[in-house]
Length: 357
Ligand SMILES: *Cc1c(COP(=O)(O)O)cnc(C)c1O
Image (tube, rainbow, N blue to C red; front, side):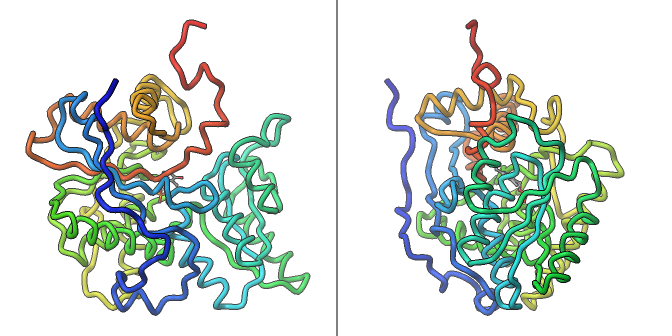
């Protein structure tokens, strides 16, 4: 029915290529978990059907570790640091369907570390599906914390681990500190090399943003490579009030600056260096509306998957931006697929699919 819609520009190799990292990054402790580089594809059929510009996709759904996704890139550095410090347990936090918790549980298991996950909300009979199911398969210990403060609860668990003679390593929500940021700095350089090889110039990069490590790392990598295109995060969960917006940008600037200092780079970031759209928050975090449904169905028509929380919202936003004429016909847009498809299994059929059943 369709033309071939997805053209692989570069065939990924299974062995990661460390030499693609700047020398400064090579000296950081890093455990190799992801299959890198991830593919860079072109969505030809999709861009034709949307009458849009050329659309490329960076497939971090295919990082190949524990069901894929973006968090493993940060975890390579975070868990690398934990191991190099001699830690024996990892503590982190997230919602019941956290992709970050799933990948952290797997990374800890792979490295022989214990893993404590602090899960917000209340456990129900139906909680243990999709991501949370995998957390248990990877052997993590789950602590349900209701709506109590996540940082305090992580400190409490860390204290208990220390009292029993262990050495804990705390990873903040989403792995979004300066160490995690290095993972997406490396990811940008990986993309840059693929674009150089394929001789393609990208004008816009669009991706979901939530805890910020992805955006901070992309910004840092882009500045190292003097990238001239525009990088826009589609906010998934930040409230669009001015003070929150400012706080989020300040957080991005802080972790990018710390990471750039690790690298010995002189570039300093400020709040205005980050572009974020708050126009697609719909009915809130994790709520699938028609924007997300349509994006999921459109991808499905090409044999491709989006996740219900992050990438469906972001690709839905991209469709609307195309329809609004936000891009020139000759521009090239890159959609960064950050994974999360495990989350599809946590939603009932009728939520994801428009149906009269
Ligand atoms: C966590 C996550 C994001 C957001 O990345 P941040 O670095 O937290 O901003 C995007 N997509 C998916 C699938 C994720 O799990």
